[in-house]
Length: 259
Ligand SMILES: C[S@@+](CC[C@H](N)C(=O)[O-])C[C@H]1O[C@@H](n2cnc3c(N)ncnc32)[C@H](O)[C@@H]1O
Image 1 (cartoon, rainbow, N blue to C red):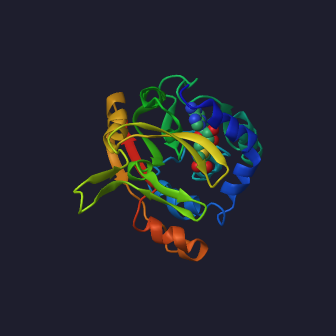
Image 2 (tube, protein in one colour):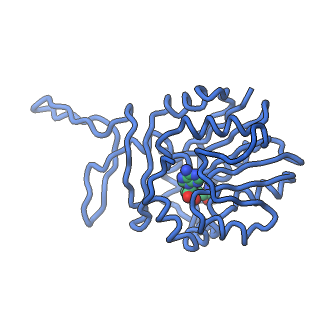
Image 3 (cartoon, rainbow, N blue to C red):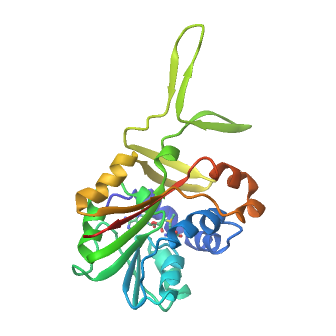
């Protein structure tokens, strides 16, 4: 398991708050108006098929996939408190507390795999992609989203009680001729984040090449890459995030195929 134990503890301790947050589109505008529409637009034809959601959280995504007519809908998550909430909210689906780096399912048991905003918590992607490849039937898709590498490469260049500045880039002092380099895009980096002042979790930055090559090295073919834009309706709910997400990506959506 290469998810940081502090991250798992955070999700377990805050499971019910997290579930209410994602279930309310006004609170989770990023999900409702940005990431989910992009993900859902790339879901394969799953009517009558077996579907697996990795890092399923409180189970909303697998519940949605079930409503599209999936025959078997399974969600796994490493945080057992979230799995309990998912099971009571979505009795029509099956849930297991399970590490997605070690899937307890036979080879070829699913026709579609899905993972929404969970992979960036995992340091070692070769196991996740290897395991997902193994449990999928040939010809199936794996659709996933993660933090966009442009965003995770940014570093805080100024931060105080009045606000902060996050950048990736270069600045030059004309007098001294000296360059300042902000951020490091090319190397994998651990990020101990405190999202929204409360969410104490560890995520990993990895450059675009590593994201794509992790899938290719496991045997997948790249099928579609999307850098989503927010839906216009987000403007009314969260206008500042809307303006930012129209220009600077937060998430990346990728669909790969097991040949
Ligand atoms: C941001 S939440 C996303 C939840 C859900 N997919 C959604 O979009 O609402 C990330 C989830 O990944 C789970 N997770 C992190 N590492 C995991 C691992 N190694 N195996 C299974 N789940 C993991 C966390 O427990 C958490 O529920």
